[in-house]
Length: 452
Image 1 (cartoon, one colour):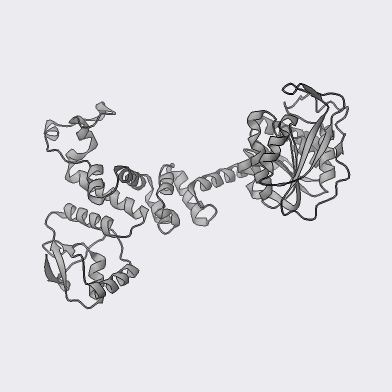
Image 2 (cartoon, rainbow, N blue to C red):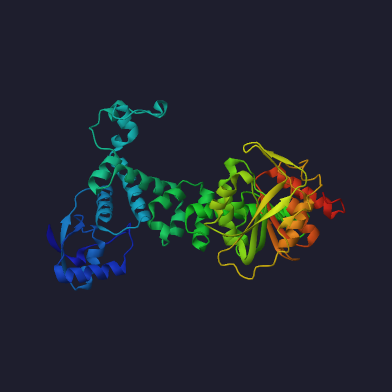
């Protein structure tokens, strides 16, 4: 190490741009404690590492600076700069990955025999694809050197897993995506960067756009946002033959109804009753708490056998208001697990915990389904309900012009009830065939066909 004139030092292209705040911080520290670490230069005076320290000393008016002369060619000098930045600089995870990626390319260019395929050929690692390896005896006979991952872990004090993950981030991200997210929070989040790097290039760019817009905060949420948008755009095209007051969407209710937050007057629905679907009631209540207006209600047909479980799943999100009777007339269903025949169904009614201005419901007894066949024969859907019965429910809990949502659309009975009563409607279903049936039923009704 020796002192060299600052004016003799040449600064060429740097991997890391100058950070004025970092320079000012270093200048204050050097003024108080002195320069604790020398800079590195080549024999010809070209700076190898210590750019921020050099600029800080310039600000302090120094004319000379302690320096270590780094021997070697351009690649080794660049490798030294990268190692210096990785060890001493406050880099974001994205910047670390770029440094590590460049380090890998340089290291394996300097030491081609350190590549994993050479190590495998020498018996140090098992082959995954032996036919892809075509190496000479000279390469096999070269001295043992650590692989890039081993060398990086040892010199930089990181795990081999961390080194691999950083390489994956650097190699997986598009250059334009890196530039777009460079100053966003994701740039310093390893797991999120990995999630982004694992996406297809086209999807990467779309996700980066959504993150930049603030419409999502995580890669997973951005992917969901994009899927919802695509579904909604496709739905808009498909709904071209439906009135503007009726929307029928294909997809999971947890993903395709988020645009209705705070707009819904009533959610009226009949989820599947099998035990494997019971957890959906909790998800339904969670969504309803977000979608309902302050006076809004969730009216959900509920299986007798799981009443307590459903209540426990829903009350963390919504306040229990009432339970109504949906009478089907003579015995229509046998609950084999309980060995009981039943002629009615429970209608749970829930509201938001901060509900206000609730509307008066004239009766908790719904009997319009009595002596009707359409809710029993299940001709269009295996969970189809009575149109007369659901029309009565919609009429009592809503007013003309209200927005009604059915997250378990089925054959579209609720949609037909809303069409008949002058309510706006949005419904969805995972089953594409059910969506098609519901759409056809609405179209048929619009053309003057029988409401059935």
